[in-house]
Image 1 (cartoon, helix red, strand yellow):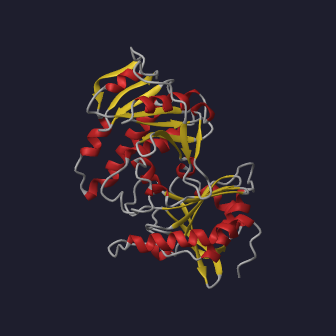
Image 2 (cartoon, rainbow, N blue to C red):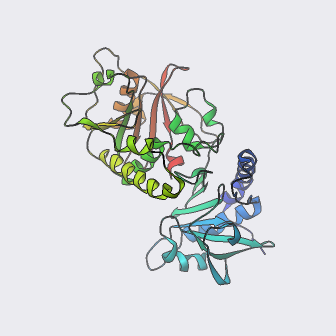
Image 3 (cartoon, rainbow, N blue to C red):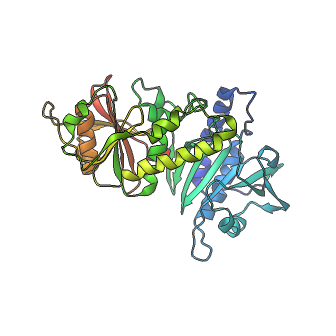
Length: 379
């Protein structure tokens, strides 16, 4: 029997999350793909409740970092199944945590009637499988895998104590929403990663992960007017351009070589994202060719000083704000906003040391620099 949840946020978000998964599974309409079962609200509520209280526990001084997947063992790939079902409780999870904290390991949870139990672990889950990450004490992230099976999971909700962030599925309906933001949201076109990889998303994830902060500028390859907004000489300019990422993305990869290609791509992404930790901005073009790193941004001699930006976050209940760019963050945010104001075909991706992540783009509809706060999509 399910016990009465005592973490109030679990009840508040459960029905919204249930509706999200129901909608996405209908939209997927992929008979050739194995899809996960739809999680009902009462099980979502129970899983969140147990995960929250687990997150506040410690075992030998360590807080648990685990991923819980709601699916039967028959839907998992190469499952490791326990002979005896285990109770789905904080006590059980905290004991198992040291064995399942590795990346890509999921604790399998399913139900017998109205009782949830732990059946084992798996590394392979189907598309749209309900996953809950216990990231740190009181921080829970609900997400699901994409149909393509590769790339950043789609975040559905982020819970931090009594703070609730439910991702707004309508956010990528904005006409001039950058592709990187649309891909992070991944709602209205759930199969969008089946044929291509949005490399900017992978770079954003890796930039945030290194924790040192940084700026990545994505500039047009058709011209070099971006030079007007950079102080020269650049300490680490590359000649010829480094094409490691571009070459990988052009490869025609056979299915049998896909895992190797994904591994190589992940390493290449981490290598480029690591350069953003160097003081200054890293520049790549829209063909994914690396131009330089450690570059200093300046206001274009032809441009004016940026005085205002539009700030949005793809979270239900968060209203757009128009503010001075200096109010959004420090020097990185101000210089990134100025760069996009001067170079309107470019985007700027800014990672802060505290985990905040902002994507700056020019909004031709509103004629303003648009700062997209996307930290809740990158957890």
